[in-house]
Length: 169
Image 1 (cartoon, rainbow, N blue to C red):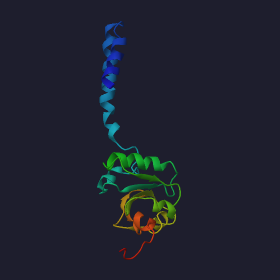
Image 2 (image 1 turned 135 degrees about the vertical axis):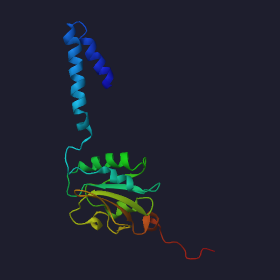
Image 3 (image 1 turned 180 degrees about the horizontal axis):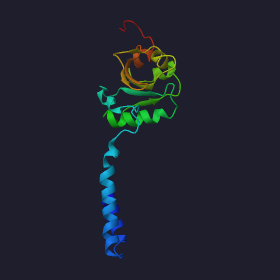
Image 4 (image 1 turned 90 degrees about the vertical axis):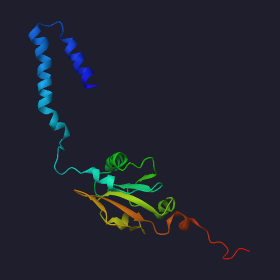
């Protein structure tokens, strides 16, 4: 849309004297060239490098779990946007937590592992998903974010199966 807006701006000036008609668009072009590099610089040196999420090896069907930890609750939306852009694994099941998961919720997750994308939890990663254990070291996204592959204890089917006969004949 930028070139079209620039052309509209230049056409609005067509009835003005020559030096204004050509000078105003030229000034806009010079300002644009002077400032273009600032558009690609992170505003804050402490801003998270979300590209780390591209290193996640998410398998089809694995659930992504978002938890803000000590950060404000709206960080779940930021985590979700970054994961959809960088992990290249959508659509897929997701869960946005506002507090640690209950065992009932964990029992509803299909599969036996999840990816937890979270701010620093006040009580550690194990408290967010009770009974889950990390499969590997977390991918750290400075300043205080983690992305970790977690194995659920028993998986959905083990939690939900009812005991049946040992030898049905």
